[in-house]
Image 1: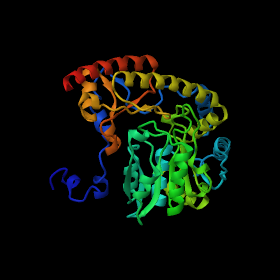
Image 2: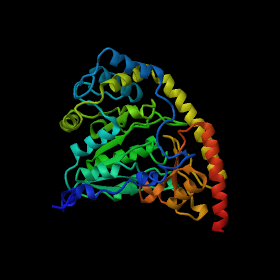
Image 3: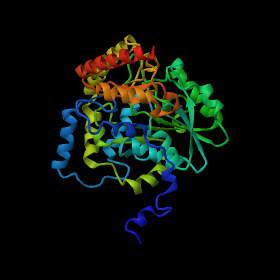
Image 4: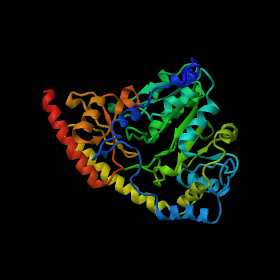
Length: 398
């Protein structure tokens, strides 16, 4: 046998995995791995360091020897704190013993949801554009992701009538995350009630990614599960990464009725065992004392948001007002460039990294995602570079 031949033998790599689309974000960020002087507005991560009290709680847990597995469900103290947190925010009641699982980030929660709900051939329906992991996790579970087109005309909010037109006998669940990554769109209560009506009439599960629920500006966030009759129809996923600046801690949770929670636990116990113990103690402290930190970070994101939206529109990159998360999603059509050409050109010519909107779905084409979770002065400098790039290419487009 020729050396290495076994590695390329037909069938050695799963056809299921080979069929997964390549991440548009990963492809793009490969370009900047060896570049210096880059201002990155591409990574969806808070620039803040995890607050001191939260870090101290993790250190304390290590010093006291809490380095072993927890329950598969997670620390009961943390689950109780999550239950209180959800009740205080949304009036929802979940039993911390049987209806909450602590997960390794919301990423694991999404995988658990799909594996517990989706059978081969089932359809899961959700907005386009959407977070890059949504479609692949449905495919990995053997299902089909059916995109619901959204547009700037409706501030990229999923419309219930568009959703309903795509429902078939194979549709099993509706899956969405608002506030939205990549658009910053927020679904108002009235919008969500229309979706709830569709879910109820067609007897569909609803899977809600609530990771950005605390990052809302100029209004209140409505949790879908809190709508009348939706609590037991909904799988709620939340986490600590965005609101508490805890991305590296990999800590999330699911809240759902008992039978669905038990189904997810059957998967969770084999693929993860339990979320990192020191991260769970950190999360417990975040829920106990982190509210002031959250409010401070949200206020600063809002300040940046207003400046970035104003500057983008002033330079001709039409941008609706994002009301949540920490992203803007401007159109780049004024330059005559595709979103991929715009992002690559901006990186090469001005050393500013943004993400092509088409990385998040076909309806993202012609837009780019700009993350304003960066220091204010960096944003000011980056936007000055973007303005130069836009003016140069707008003149060429003419």
